Amino acid sequence: MSGQVNTGEREYLRMTFNERIQHFLLLSSFIVLILTGFGLKFPEAFWVKWIVFIIGENAFEARGIVHRIAGGVMIVASLYHLYYILFTVRGKQLVRDFWPKKQDITDFKNSMLYLIGKRETRPKFGRFSYIERMEYWAVVWGTIVMGATGTVLWFENIFLKFTTNEGMDIATAVHYYEAILASLAILVWHFYFVFLNPDVYPMNKASFKGFLTREEMEKEHPLELEEIEGVETEESKGMNELDDSKNDNIEELIIDEGKKETDDVSKKETEVMVKNKTEFKDNHGEDE
Image (cartoon, rainbow, N blue to C red):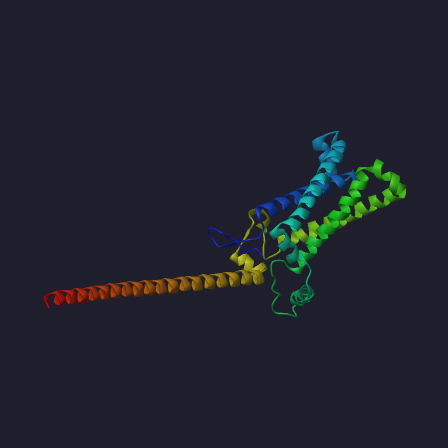
């Protein structure tokens, strides 16, 4: 749950700086991989010719180097993300929140009913909707497949001993078609929800600034907002009860101190009376 609140205007934490860096590395390396990968597959495409015109005769040689560097960045970023979700508190919570739930099926059905006009209100989502969960696990799957097949193709001389030519052909085909699928998923699906979705248009800025406003939370993650405010209410109630308890303890302490002082005074008065009485007896005894 992203319950931390930024100072100043009421804003709710969506992505920490660490998570934004991970997202940036994944996004930038993915875009470079798309351009350099399809640039090799479709050298006659108009946008490839523009790249060749800008870079010069060494464009294709540079393409291979840049493609491998971008692949290395993506693999390193993915390995760090694996560490993040396994060994950090927030990372572990991230996986729990991304894990598919039965409610996702109901939310999907209700969303479809809402879109075709059979339902007046759309379903409320928590930290992640069924759409975001599908995107996350699609990225996980795609990264594993692309990383594995890309490594086989990168170190062809090593893997050729074990895979033979047929294995290399299979790796090439899987790498290519998974690249198409991943590109469509990001460019059509993910970019729609980041840029064209009416709730966030012209852009969801959480991946850059890390926070969402209350209005954005109410539209996109109302259940999470209710959860955050519920926790804050409980914490505030607990603090009030603690303050009341402290006040009660202070009052009891004051009363105890007052009683102690009263007892001390009474004790001193008694001692004085006993002393006076003793002196009186002694004086009268001498007179007799």
